[in-house]
Image 1 (cartoon, one colour):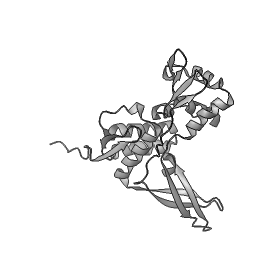
Image 2 (tube, one colour):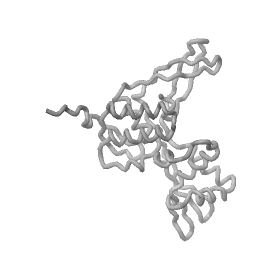
Image 3 (cartoon, one colour):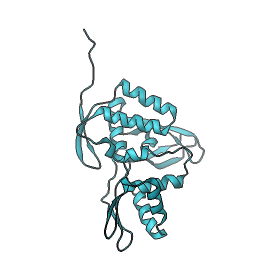
Image 4 (cartoon, helix red, strand yellow):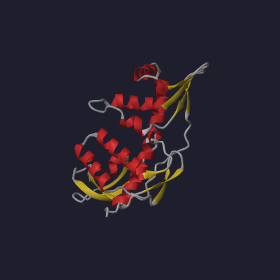
Length: 234
């Protein structure tokens, strides 16, 4: 008689933030946790991104285009799955800004949801050129080569990932069909005011966040901080 396969059916519901689509999911199992732990121990961002993406593919059920999920979709979905897998809280080490002592703080994860504001997704660049924007996809961000990359180059690539179409008076260009070099040349051709419009959009990209209040266990200084992005919670 073959051994039974346990816990391989969906048990819970959640909503994908960018689309409001309801999906079913199961907690991740030992096989997925091993991959996550190995990726975490490697301290390699690409390995961690892939492990998170693979975990979603294994645990979430439904007609989903995983490559179209936004960064904040993946952040929220992973934290939700993690909460049902190993507990709806996480312990993080937070450094005191006064004495630099690190205090272990317990963070509740069950009320975290990205703040997806009603944002104008059309940016007018000139009288006859406009940009249709999109929230960056996790698949695009995880493909970025972060090794030895400057903060400026990462920011520019993020902005490029936010542009879906470039509309002119007689054409509609799908940016995903263009080369990285072509996209960069277009961004480089913007003047300061035009570029600031794109920067403001990028700064408003939704992310998971949580206000945390804690007291340093060493000097007893009280802190009010905001944790943002998936790396802050683990």
